[in-house]
Image 1 (spheres, rainbow, N blue to C red):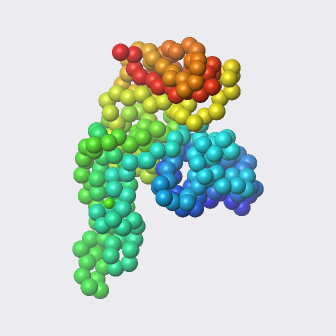
Image 2 (image 1 turned 60 degrees about the vertical axis):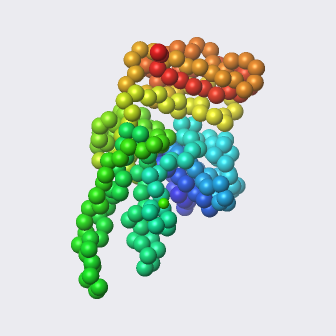
Image 3 (image 1 turned 135 degrees about the horizontal axis):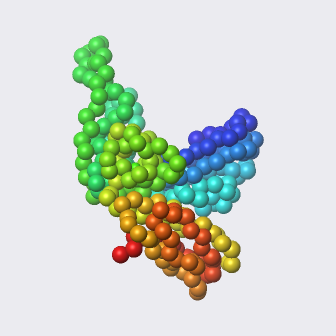
Length: 264
Ligand SMILES: [Ca+2]
Ligand SMILES: [Ca+2]
Ligand SMILES: [Ca+2]
């Protein structure tokens, strides 16, 4: 994504941003006014030269560099979105002249509850004859449970619409192209997703910070636990009610990882 030409107020939410080369988000210096970005899933391949972002005239290669420089994406993560099959059965990503029109590329995200393999929101070309194009037809979607669970499911902004997603939709919009559509991947009956902090943040010792999660299907309070890499605990006040999705922690150690789950 390129933000440029003195545009203001750009707000990027609920996107899967995968850049093996070039930039995931490239913000030139003049349009930073009002720029906002959050609830995204970033990724890049191991062997690419891609940068997560470009900010203030410099490459921000890693997600942590991007987040620290831009001050955005506190509720975003860096993880494989676990597409069903991004390059499809033929192993070719996108259109390849004379080989494939790219319809086999499947950007639904994997769900153990089920995802819509092979479906598409746009029509594809039906049976054609030499010189005679086929009619537009709908690709057939087959609801299929996957072995893995994509981190994009229910990670979207809590204020964004999700009602077009089929049940069970988790009560939150999915990140990616199929969020809030009839082909959104299905949610588990019960889940807790820790939105922030989710690893890699720098938090000044003694300062307060926000612990935020999104959950559905849980009853009662949530238990928050902290595992400090260095000495000391990272969270003070570990219990919040289930419908309060934000609590404040107090940083005591130098670094740590927050986990949360429904109270057993
Ligand atoms: Ca393909
Ligand atoms: Ca493939
Ligand atoms: Ca959802």
